[in-house]
Image 1 (cartoon, rainbow, N blue to C red):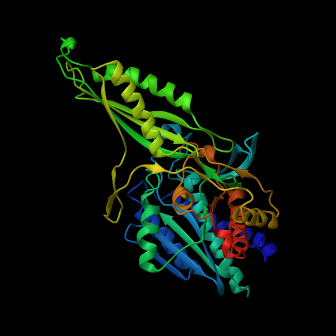
Image 2: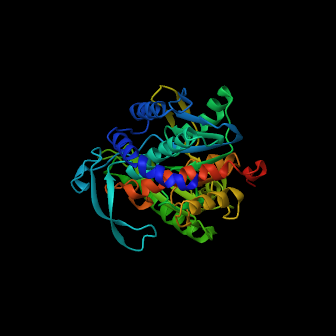
Image 3: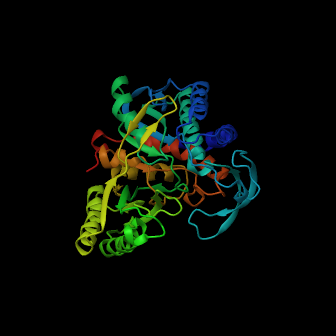
Length: 434
């Protein structure tokens, strides 16, 4: 069966590439994913998935039911993507053109460049290349079933909305509302986020912190009659950088915790008026042992310190929570938090996935994401095992050089199907995550 997967992957590659091109040609900014959701649903129905549906939030699900009892392995992608940005930066490529050509690209380990055939376009690397190959990995399993092979368990593809805003709203609603309503569950997850055909085993947590520094307005001609909130913010910003650097946690696999000031503005923001409010947004990344709450407390400590030194310094900090509306019209607000997580290389789930990659003749390599993913809900909250595995390369995500290697797509079809076949043979106790 594993020998046949390589042949099936080669056979299905043209269809997967063409499907990926259609996905890229279909814009799907967060909150406007309907057309790309329609494409996923239509493709799964065409390929013969046993059950295909869209939930109330706009998430899409396709299930291939095994002939024998076994675990359900969720293959997860997200439907949305970030804005293409300035078109002039795209080196002549149309971000929605899905053009194919041969270019210099990073090799798997980012130690040099090599020639490869790629598909260009927004979300090729995040995550339409991976979504297409997950769908066709499922089709490879259907093909095996048609050849007479008995499949265990269930292959479940999920495409979720609103991943890019980072609150994980689509995934949370899928697990907390849709699955219970439909009597569905899952045992482990394979994410299509960019991994360069390596097995990715974790990432740092993330929390978005909003700070408001208060002052008092006055006429710009008499600034001594007011308290300039922006001037107060400058010392605060410097002190935050110092404190986070001093207290930074470190994980041998995930690296150091960090903070980045991503948004700053003031109000009223008008000529001749001293600003009475400075609004700052921080992107705080943290490692296991730290939490969103400890990161919040750290910033509150800076506020308390500066308030004790300066009676005119006033500020508040909170975890950001912004209402998000899906393309189906449903709205919800959840805090912008991702938990830190990682899974050990010796975990049975990971060892089975590694065995699967080896079974199709590919090298087994490991990695960890710099960015965050919806797997925080799976491993961090639900304590179920998960890995990342896909053809895309992290260096091309969110950039105007967005692309996916076609040779990696072929390998990913075989790899994803092989991983499923190995995982469904695991005993029930192998799906626990401490």
